[in-house]
Length: 79
Image (spheres, rainbow, N blue to C red):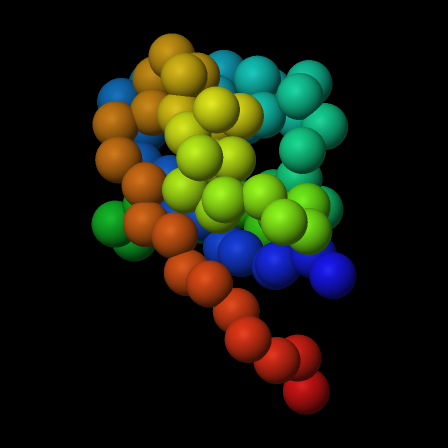
């Protein structure tokens, strides 16, 4: 069973579209949105069964140039 997580991403000024494009090209996400407020993007992704959530995000997302900070929210049950 996969784990659904939401990752909010703060980008360096002027890089949000480049970061979004880099994420889209990796095809790791279910949905990707631009947002207002403290973070620039919100990413919904499913972590493969048995994978370490932190390592998966680190290995597949955090090396993208322009990402300053992230906030990851784990989910438990969909209603």
